Length: 400
Ligand code: GLN
Image (tube, rainbow, N blue to C red; front, side, top):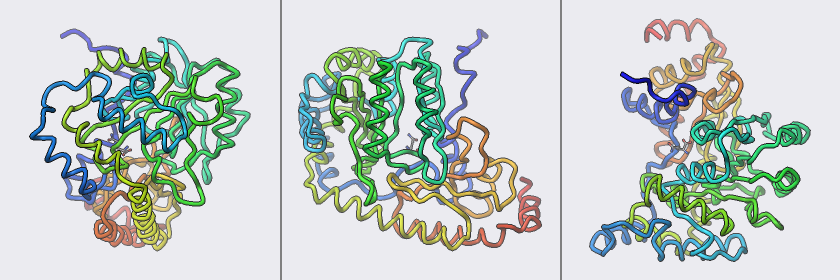
């Protein structure tokens, strides 16, 4: 049999999706892969029902159904204050996952360098490799996950073609400040690099933090490629709807990449999602209130476990420090957590550039009852934290 491509030897399958499968196998509550267990808003579901009987069963326009792109342009314009022309500024993609791949392939030549903050959402390293680019990592350090401006400047001195900014950040929950984004943009301008942002959690930002759209900063539009998704905002992760928003010259190229990668996103789902894009402001207020309540419930349980954890400024992920459980590697700890405690998380190491085994990432995009059930289970960590014999005994029992 011929050998498969060598670029595939340097990264693994997604650990996040793998943990979801392991959770299912062992019947654990899945707080690993970040997706809701509650329904999308009612108007979106009603629109989906209507769409099934409409003329939406063949290909939509490759860069997005006109009605969807128009609604998207109105929403983005309202949020950012930018003029958004649905014909020139947008490409609709299959989730932000495709949007990021399109952005990378549009911006980078093989061999170009791309700055990635570490920890990072695991797709970015794979996106870089698949597009032939080489990631340069700049650490975000706990507890507040700020970058060191000198380190960032040194990374830019290596002449990268782009920097990837996940804002709000998965997995740290960091929300980049206006000052930080301004600084990143100034460096990008100085070194003529693109700023590729990934912003699916734009509406899940806990006050006093606020979401700043990099593209809307003065002069930023020419070099900012914004990737985004409807998955988290409308609780439709399975619909795979996302988009790239950028300057017309960039979009003209991005359309080609998207066209040959996927042709287009699902036509009936684009039609139905218009109902989401047209929801009133109160929807976003309720979404945030609901995630704030979920965060408070989940963090309340974590506090009782006595373990340390990050308090997210935005998005719905928490990195829990599991050093007290005494595992050498976080992947064994995560499997133990599934089998002994009954709650699935993602081993933190899959988000870090350097070997880092102190964290497991949990998410709280779940109904309160699910979070309470998971929280009750997590309280059992008190039987194990700082008690190596109890952990050893459990591992023997589980042959782990
Ligand atoms: N963004 C979510 C996470 O980080 C889900 C990612 C995915 O599986 N596409 O868990």
